[in-house]
Amino acid sequence: MRVVGRGAVLLTAIAGAAIVVLRRPDAVLHAQFWAEDGPLWFGQAWNGGSLHALTTSYSGYLQTLPRLLALPAVALGLRHAPLLFNASAIAIQVAPAVFFVSNRCESLVPRRSVRVLVAFLYLLLPNGEINANITNAQWHLALLAFLVIVARRPRSRWARALDCIVVAVSCLSGPFCLVLVPVAAAWWWRRRGNGMLWLGSAATAATAIQVAALLLSTRPSPPHLGASIGGAMVIFANRVVLAGSFAQDQAPFLLADSGRSNALWAIPVTIVGIGVLGTTLLRGPLSLRLFVLAAGVVMLGGMLDARQDPGQPPLWRGMATPPFGGRYIFMMEVAWMVSVIWVASRLPRPRIRILGVTAACTCFVSGVAIHWSYAPYADLHPERYASQLERAGRGTIVTVPLNPPGWTVTLVAH
Image (tube, rainbow, N blue to C red):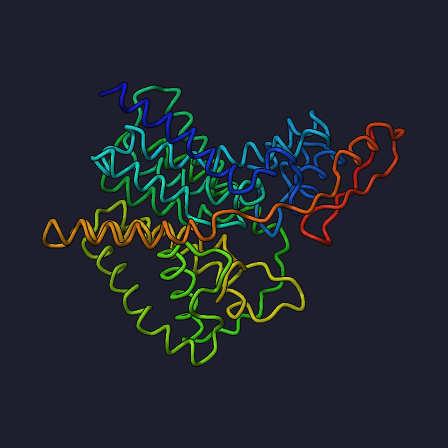
């Protein structure tokens, strides 16, 4: 049985990495920085020192995960740093699936076959914005931290220490401490033990540091929301229920915007979505209920305080259709997907249960097949700038263009 378990974990790790890479092979075959990867994580560590960059906040929060990876990236130099970033992001992206399949999560879902199914649906769930880039790897790390909190405690001291590190780094990478600490508190209340005490202490200490950074830093101006009940229904119907059910990431699917006509179409979809999630919250296991609540809080936070560039339309209008703001929707899509499977598995008759799960998986997989790959990044010839930086005299400034268009990183030759 143990051999079977290890085999399933290994298979999930290999297949998961293959899925992520095959959707955008250039992430490995021709690695390049993406957005903040260059000027913030690598550039600040290269120009100002890695330790100083580690304590620098961005958008009001500490971003410890990418800044920790910038330490070895600086040693590798501009030529190899993008590959390190992307490979690390892929490993973090696959990690929640691998962990969920392992015996640690047997107490959450006893049947390994079901855990494997959920893990692969998670890996196949499209979200190009957070795929294989270290800037957005914090969202996958937060999911892993949640699983660590609710999973069975490990026996090894080293494994317990690793659990604490995962939770602490997640709490120190963005605002996820605001949901992870309440989750840890609720789980400790129901599952008291020394393991939870250590995890809770790590999360609380990291949260105290993150809150201090938030209070001492300057936050960007709040976005123009354009909030309305109809807009909220379209976002929920389009980005969670429809996109999560049909694995849509790039197309608006049925509802093209947040206008009044689409708000009317969103009503029945919203009712179905609330029914499924409401059933999960009322009757589901504690771990699933906590995950739905945590994912909902994360999504709501994005709807109220997402980063918005000048000149863009109101936030809620932009979030009504993909791919804008996909990172804020990601955890709610996962929660929706798992809730659909759980509700379908609780249908009254075996044939109906099988039909429900099969229908849900068929809709999902058909969407994955239609929209499998992501467009490769534009080739900006990073090796040319790496050679230029390597040959430049000490103090020479080299400016490197990045994806997406308009982003650059300015590096001072050492």
